[in-house]
Length: 173
Image 1 (cartoon, rainbow, N blue to C red):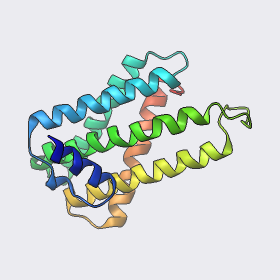
Image 2: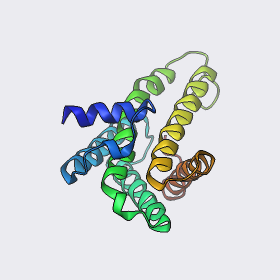
Image 3: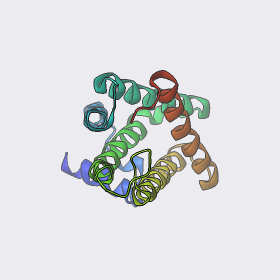
Image 4: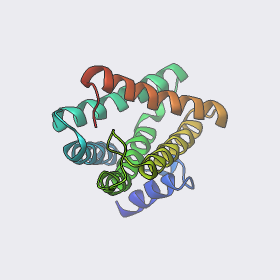
């Protein structure tokens, strides 16, 4: 299991590829569970009136549905296990890294009226850019497409996921 987790970390560092992960349902389920658990922690800390359990469950499910649709359109569903493990595992790692940064940004005295400092905004944008880069790398390797198209798909995936969450629940943070 440790080599697979190391590979996930290397995927987040843009070194490894999703095909370097084991094609194991157990590892896939572990990645989904980790992504869900970390989203639940984040929503528990950040969500105003929303139900953190429901928010995490819907976000986790939507991530998989969006990724599966992309694979189906591209005719690459045979790569589901490894690529979805990479998507969920990298989301878990990046969200785990984001949690202390985002929550510490909420306590800075120089906040604007929305409660987030300018420095925190820049860090959050940087973390989002890192997420897009990782997802683009996974997308490029999985679909065997060029990098600009992979970046566009990754940004679209992030946008669709966030818009779906906001449409269903309003502001989730």
